[in-house]
Image (cartoon, chains in turn green, red):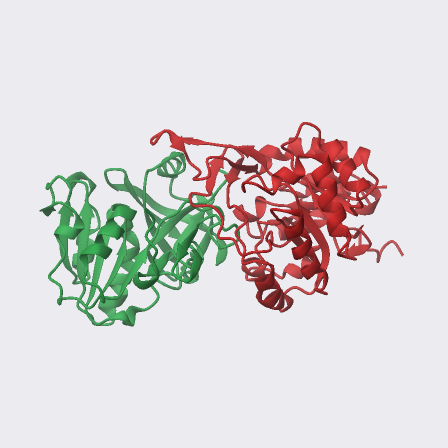
Length: 248
Length: 304
């Protein structure tokens, strides 16, 4: 964890309710894809945890969905504004060597953290299959970015206006074409994927939870796992498929 | 001589502290996450995560909700249990924190409190026992001891019998007359009183029309509660002669001074740590200038 000031370089709408923000500052605190940053907003008590889409030495890019007052405030932030940011939070996707033929599955605003992972997996020379799920064509974002990395991208949308009609589970490549998976998205999607992907295929799943601090102090986001419990913010947000205890 | 005197030093129940600033239980874990970003030995001390006899997973999530100028939590005393705290957390803490630490203890029966306090009494790292009779987020215990003067006195008396360490009883604000509870604890032998724990509150999610917190209700903390806390600290400090540890929404050096002017000997900082991991460091660093501004030579002079 590192606290520092970042300056907004870019903040623009890229799809229905989806915004992209580029922050200039010390990006070296981000040590793994799938980590998140925690942003202090004016007039809001708790920070807002947002996953890292991309990072390099001098910048961090986030893609956020307008879900409440805080993220709505963020859409009005202009380039040049300074933000107090905690960076390098969470474990992230921890083992790019999990398999040699990874499958990445993202749903909606769960897609962004998979981008830095895809970039690193491609840089390591792996073939990367990607399945992206949206509600409809108006929500689609990031597809070209994954294609530009050389990923094999499939798409699903609930209303059929983009890619396969249905959910990401309807657009999965055939078993045997991948030997591990990485995913982030809404809880029902994660659950459905765990049921759809053959048992024995290793997977890392990124979870979302309401957080207090975002760095492991308040125990506000603890969930049970096999053999104990984990703080989603500090021990997660990425959990191993084998340790997950699905809640009713 | 005044020039070498530590202006920020205070004495809490016979133990000298370098300053009056103490991160509050439940907002600082066992210190590890904060030790990653600053040397926490600059603190007066800190009160570690509320510890119970048995391990507790705590409440289901969501456990956190934002409020204007604050937050609700319903963590429900998640902790690994006193045996694991002694076996694992205290030795780990010894590597990065070298001062007496405040052990926060909770329970569901008098026997629970006695069991946990007796074990922690043997730990040399522990300076004080902060006995929490005020957790609003667990059922059939915790706060129920803190809302009845007789029960509060019974816990205090039982704990005092098994420890030689100073016992500070942490009170709930969710009562009609907190002074009555504080007096009962003092009469039962409490060496100090800390207050306030969180104020019971709730939020509803407009989309689902259901409470945000899985526990329905939770404890309110943050700057929103500061005036309520200050008032209660003032009332209790007027009524008891043992030291009072004030807490509730403290965020700045000025808040610390205000709490001490209300009668607090030391001040705990809670929710501020969760928003700014460096909050206590910033407060300690800002204290001398704030004291200069208001003509305060030493913190000790505020509490005569």
